[in-house]
Amino acid sequence: MAARFIVEADGGSRGNPGPAGYGAVVRDGDTGQLVAEAAEFIGHATNNVAEYRGLIAGLRAARELDPDASVDVRMDSKLVVEQMSGRWKIKHPDMQPLAAEARTLFPRGRVTYTWIPRERNKDADRLANEAMDAGRDGRQWEPRKPAAPVDAAAALAAEPLGKGVSKAGWAAPADLGTPTTFVLLRHGETPLTPEKRFSGSGGSDPELSDKGRWQAERAAEALAARGSIQAVVASPMRRTRQTAEIVAARLGLEVRYEEGLREVDFGAWEGLTFAEVRERYPDDLTAWLGSAKARPTGSSESFTTLTHRVGVARDKVLARYPGRTVLVVSHVSPIKTLVRLALGAPPDSMYRMELSAASICAVQYYADGNASLRLLNDASHLR
Image 1 (cartoon, rainbow, N blue to C red):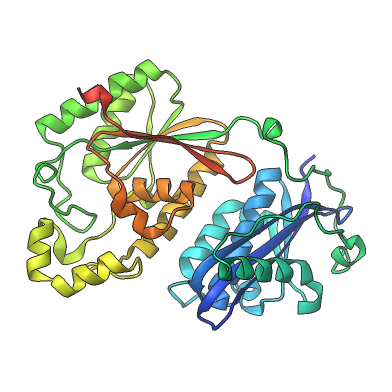
Image 2 (spheres, rainbow, N blue to C red):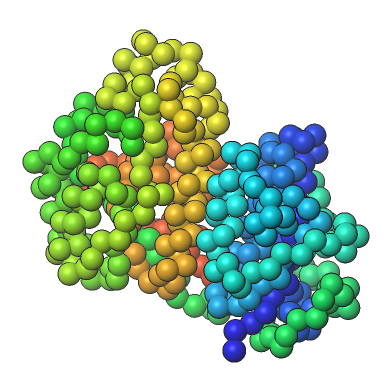
């Protein structure tokens, strides 16, 4: 029988916007026993962004315990509860991708949202403040050992829930089960690649060059020899479709396309070299290199927006293929983003990664929410 969980989540910002963090707890729906908790300092953000991030963390923790569970979310944020219940529209661009990500974690019919007073959300609020305190001290939040005692009666006070399956908290590594593995393949070369020209989702959508097809074929050979790929997911852009189709044909698999894996839109920079952009748009380039929230000239997409989009795509694939090895065929920016998120590295780390055409990376995702980078920029099959 699938479990029933209570998720309590909160977020805060000291300044709104200012230094922000979130907290979330997951309780067994029958006993009120604490089975998981999460918190994180998220840098400079608003209260509402932090609250949504807390919601996502709580839902993700519940899904890792039982992906078939039903969940009652309880928050003291009227905004998040009403928006996620569908009664209020989500107009703010910072909230829209977060709400979309939250909706991917469980089917709509298995999650309910309940507003509770702040005094009944003390554990999530405490965790959010612990995360902000950790950020102030230059570190990330870590769970206390042992966990704080749980007030089961208070947890169950909102409304009675049905019988559930009790889950163990904070599983030991040996109990995490088989991780989901993403084998990340960058597409082969296009005519723009050797000239190092910006080539995003807003340009000419070039196809593979002859060398790019050769690279895709070599990658297909290497991945066939690996022998563990069970599914193929790709960006819908021409160069990734062509690369994925070459590999999938060799593996005897079909390709599933995911819009969230497309390259970032480089706006007016499409087709230009870095030097040409620096000459024509020096101020915009400087801003873009200095902030993940800055956008290329004429583009509607920053690296912050990209991160939300790629995170949603990642969670969709994880939900569809738990415990399996999935080939993800994408582009430089989405792959670097997946690597960065797995490492918990800051946004500017993307400028310190090399990712060759048709190179292979690998990331494993575990049931406790952790990820492990297993391989980066392997191009040995192209020698």
